[in-house]
Length: 87
Image (cartoon, rainbow, N blue to C red):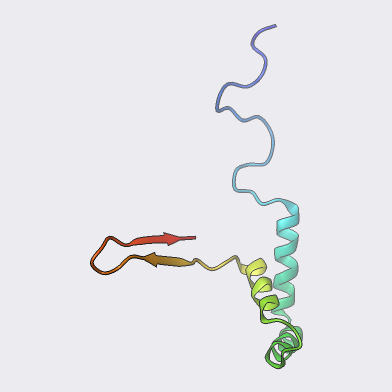
């Protein structure tokens, strides 16, 4: 029974490339709702400023809601070649 299966590089079924899974979308939606509520956001900022909660919590919440910011790392002296890495 030859001829069954997919050809090399052929995809059958599944999620389209680039489509986030439901868990990712739900987490993003939840984080955005928290950050869009002015009362909750004011409370979180006040707690972060007094040290009651870690500022890293807000950083993580923002990264869930809006994605991580791009980081640029540069290495090398002005006399040599430089390497730039963007995440």
